[in-house]
Image (cartoon, rainbow, N blue to C red):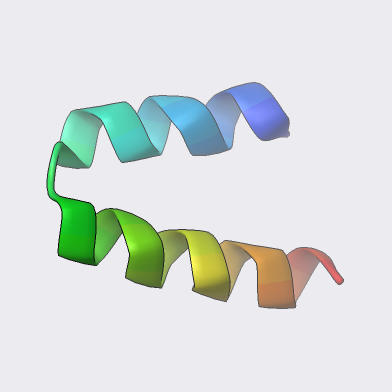
Length: 30
């Protein structure tokens, strides 16, 4: 699961979207 998250973040290559997506994914995982 972590690898998929990192791949999605790398594809975005956008600091703002990266942070938003990371927060959303972490909330869903938790």
